[in-house]
Amino acid sequence: MTGKSIMLVRHGTSTWSASGQHTSLTDIGLTVQGEQEAHALRDILNLRHYDMVYSSTLRRAHDTARLAGFPDAQLDDDLCEWRYGQYEGKTTKEIQVNDPHWSIFRSGAPGGETPDDVEQRCDRLLTKWHHSGHAHILCFSHGHLLRALATRWLGQNILLGNHLNLDAGSISILAWEHHEHALALWNYCPYSVVNEV
Image 1: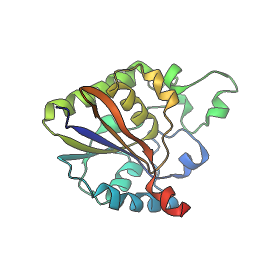
Image 2: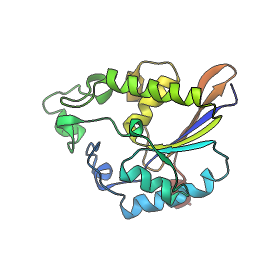
Image 3: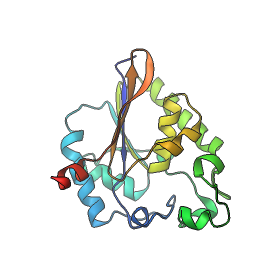
Image 4: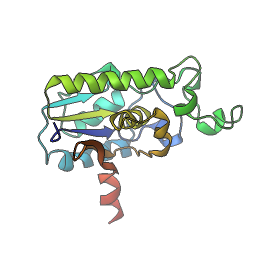
């Protein structure tokens, strides 16, 4: 059991992720930079073998999977982004005008999902993957959902997601430290590394 791992990939930059607008079911594609970030994932991701590859059904995640070399990733609605309801398209700054202490992990979104809703969705994914028999899983998804998924892998309250920054086009790995769930890698951005040289 301790040899298992789940590799998480946040989709590349979209117009709204670049502007800080909350994007759940608004199905927008990648920017040119987002496509470059997705291409930059290819060499790193292909160093490993995966028993199963999953992607959110939303275009920005599935396009990232395709451009990274995984066009046949199995689509899964549970990997879609946190539903923001009335906060769709709004920035954190705009939301905090009326609610200065607002955080998606603390408060959820009116007309969207609560932290409990997303916690249950993440637990459902992890349970399904545990029972699948797959040792190494790769999944392409979204910033808030992947941060929530990591908290649940660690057995922590979803509020911990507030403290886990996750950039577009990043790779993270959920694995084990001895017999405990652990983060083996967090927020590694191949595109940024290459372009800083």
